[in-house]
Length: 141
Image (cartoon, rainbow, N blue to C red; front, side):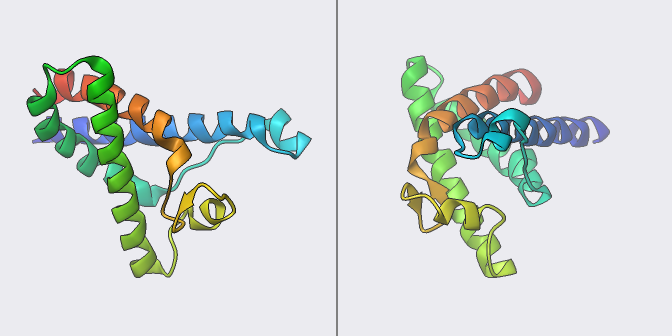
């Protein structure tokens, strides 16, 4: 039991870490020079259950069905599922808290889908899905 909790915490930490790296790297494209120099990244503890439970458990079931597909096809499938999962999760947090943690930032972009996800993050979701596929295959199977 302790092993499974530890593995789920690893998933949560990896997910949050990837998000911090992604938001930090995206600061390179900010108009404010101070942001480009500092490269601050961020996330929210609200996302921990998504990375620790929803994403790995979803991946566990999905990757067994798509495991023989080519890498890019699997990545695209994972990205669609991650994007849908983010939309649903951020919508749920919006209902629970009045807004989701990233909603204000997402709504500033014309690439936002109702402030719950951004379609231009699709390539990042491909990479995230493939990283979690690797972790699921080596930690949950």
